Length: 385
View 1 (tube, rainbow, N blue to C red):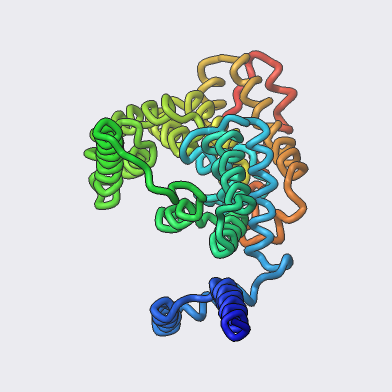
View 2: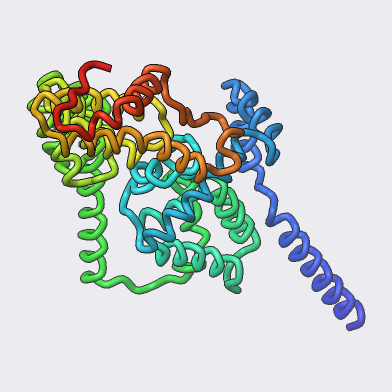
C-alpha cells in the first residue's frame, strides 16, 4: 500500500515535471522545425543576404538615415491622417504624400502598417487590428507561442510593412484564439463559404490579371480590364507621343485622383507646345501645389509665365499681365513658406529638397522688378527678358 502510494506520488511528480518541461520547451521548435530553421538560415547566408542583415542591424540607430526617414514619414502620415480620419483609399498615401510632406521623399509604403491601414481605410480598421492583437495577447486560450509570434509580427509592423505580405498575414491570423473547437457545418453554410471564397478568388484573379498586364507593358489592356487603374494610366501618359491622347488620359486620371501631379505636368507641357501659355501656367501652378520640393518645377513655372506675359502684352491684355507678374513675383515667397514648413530632419535624411531657383529665373525676376512700374501703363510691352 505504501509502495503503491509512493509510486503514485512519484508518477504524479514525474507527470508534473514532464508538463513543466513541456511548457518550458513549448517555446522551442521540434526536431523537424530545427531542420527548417537551419535550412532558412543557410539560404540567407548562401544568397549573400547576410550583408543586408548586418547592415540593417548595424544601422539600428536614431542617427542613421533610414530611421530618420521613418520619423519624417510618421510625422507627415499623422498629419495626413488628421486631415482624413476615414482614410484616402488604396494607395492614398502614395499619391497624397507630396502635398503635405515636410521633407523630400517618395515612398509607396509609410513603413508602419498600422498607420498605413489607418490612412488607406480609416482609423476604425486600424483600431480593429490593434484589438485583434490585444485579444491574442490576453485571451486565456492563446498559447505562449501565439502571443510571442503576434507581438513579434505586430511590433515589426510598427516600423515596416510586414502585414503587406499575405503569408505573414496568414500566420498572424492563425494565432487568433478562434476555431479551435469542432463545429457542425451544414450544407447551407458550406455553400455560403464556397461562394464567398470563389468570389474572392475571382476578384483577386481580376485584379491580378490587370496588374500582370501592366507589368509586362500592356497598360492600355490593363485599364480596359480595370478602368480605375491609375498607375497604368500614369505610365501611358508618360509614354504617349500624341498630345491629344495625352490630354485625354491626363483628364481621365485627374477625374479619379486630383493628387497625380504627373497628369498636371503633362497637360502643362502639351498646352505649352500648342502655344496656350496661360493654360500651361495654370497647370504648372497646380503641380507646385501638390509637389513642392523641387526647384526645377518653379523654374519651369516661371518660364511658362514669361511666355504667357509676352502673349498677354502682344494682345494688350494688361489685367492678365498684372496677374502673371504678381504670380511670378510671389514665387520666392512661396519657396520661403515651404522652407518654413520643413521638418528639422529634412536636410539630414537621404534625399534633400532643392528649394532654390536657377540663375535664369533670378534674371527674369529682376527684369520684372525693373519693369514693374512700366507695367501699369497700358502701352508698355514686356518684350523678351
